[in-house]
Length: 267
Image: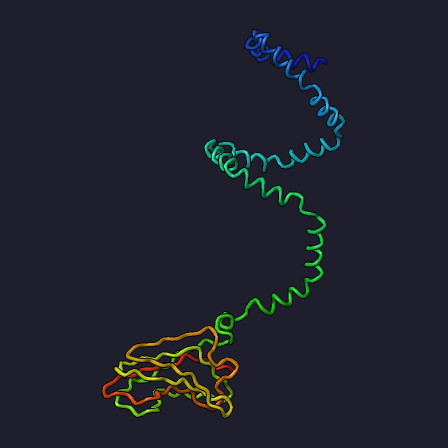
């Protein structure tokens, strides 16, 4: 008691100031406050009843935690205490503007069953070894295989310029397939200024069978064709054979021809 009285005495000036500034608060204000308390008595009573026996041990632990983290709390407050009210207002405005969407998302997800989540996590955990093997074997999966279907980066080869007249069946470009490799063709380049046009044959040999694609050009022009899938997929040019492009018809005098093949070799 002595300590309390001493405290009151030492704070007399402050107490006097507070009392002086508030002693003439209108009774109507006081009455309004009391009416408000009375009107909410049930709610207030419920809150008090629910919390009046809050364990002192829990409170002590909470206060102890706050005290032990005082430096961190102070740092956060110091950093954020002067956050512009305009920022806060903008955030609140954004929340309000998107209230419908936010409410829909919360409503759809707030009751997501913990059992479902637990089952999913359990499944992942039980398959961890398999998942690890798949990731380990695929994390460095060649990008060229994703793009071209084979672990190879195709390259272009081109012919020199051929000038007519040229006989029907003239081979404009021939390229050998290396020993121990199959060769795949992903595209071709055909360019000519023959006024009569011509028909080109893109050829390769699989085993002992000659395969070819025919491209008809009715007049001067250029065709530059590239496919993500090899045009001879499943029937590659066999080792030690030759890929070629030839013209089907005779070429006119002074007509110019240039052709190319986009190919890659796979062991």
